[in-house]
Length: 117
Length: 112
Image 1 (cartoon, rainbow over the protein chains, first blue to last red):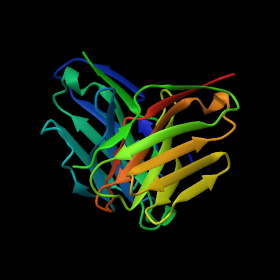
Image 2: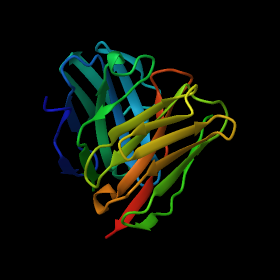
Image 3: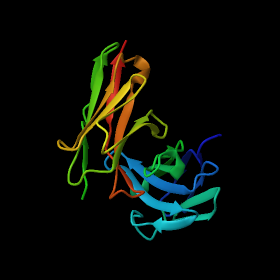
């Protein structure tokens, strides 16, 4: 298995532009998470999907952020319009309940480093 | 709300020694606690999980303890190697749910 695949690995854009980050979870994993990591705030959970349905988006900073999961093998995180304070590394992670019953063990992608100028 | 505290200062040790990292949390005790390793430019990688009714868990050179009275977990790497140099994150579940919250991590540097 190739693991969780994220693209792009690096994105540099100008303030006001739309940014779309993509994620392919591990086949068979039914939970998908988007996290954001910064030096100041560490890893923050943005949104959680279970069986392609958004369950909790309380971590999404504001309306400029949106996420979709149209099928079990693909998810996007979109920022429109982007701002310099959105600069961070965005991670996608997936999990399957069978990995550790009652627990949530995450497999992370390599991340997408976003820089908004 | 639940808070996790990990030593923000890097831990610098000599190869062959045992590295001990600390994770403290406030408020309620989680149902389980996890440790992840993160290398520069990569995503965190799961290492070990310990449940609230377990005192200790081992995997090769790694050992995790969980003290719900002290609200603390210790992560040990015995016979440390330069390849163990990385940032180590602890993570707790929120109310026994899917929601994992992560500590800020402790950077470990093992000198040859």
